[in-house]
Length: 345
Ligand code: F6P
Image (tube, rainbow, N blue to C red; front, side, top):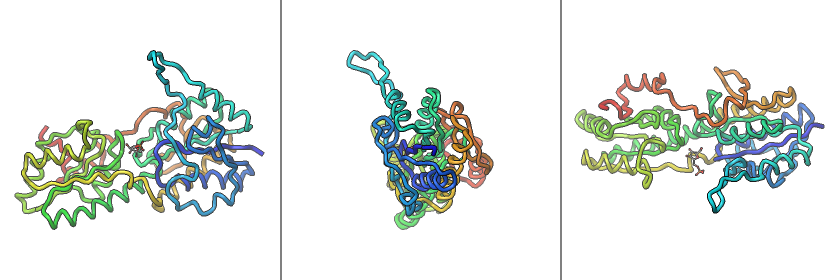
């Protein structure tokens, strides 16, 4: 029988187990393949650290957060500098190839974000059969309209914003909430809109602190006693403190209105996936198994206009999918009076 490997790499997110289950069950039940799960992302491939996954081990994990295989940010192609600052290529790619040959693998399914896809592409160029599955709460993988994990994170961040509304109202405060997203503003935009944020700051749109303060002061004049500011972690800010601290201090200084900040952090990546993320991850997983059966290697499974498709890994790796500054949701939001902090630039 054909033998496949699965690994999860990069920052975790809800839905990883659903994707592992989707690949594994389809591969075993539909195609009679053998499935090896590699531990801790690419480290498992480097160190030949794996477990044989039977169908029974894939039961009961659909709803569970995190990843049964563990993950790491290991980048086997990263150039490491030695003491004399000379760049040297490590032999990790060689070790991966050795594992692949020794275990007689027919394909490796790499579940991850942009970094993972970049490595997957390098491995494909070395001659390994590889298929990528896009995951991340950041929703920033090039080549697909959506990654699993994103909706779950939007749900968690929206719940948090909902709770901040009530305490902000009681105390008549400005509340800053910082959400993740790396260099992309998807999570801030979607949770900000779902949670009724008054001001949303995205890395893609340069903001001006005077604009932010003007909006808050205008709300006070309009007898709106509190404001919710949703800030993406990736906005321009001094690196020695959080984006939320930077914005909160500036607002309090200029407006003299009591301001508090919340950095939501890793809660956004934890726990059970939403039903839609379970389904998306399952569909990606099952489709990846089908792609293996059809020999469609060197690709990433993707969702485009609600259709499952594949994209060559050569088009994906390393590129970020950022929010378009003319995104229809931003346009609608502006017409409703939501500020993006750039009105008076
Ligand atoms: O990519 C997911 C993500 O949670 C980003 O939103 C965040 O910037 C980063 O990972 C945090 O990385 P780490 O898990 O290495 O602290």
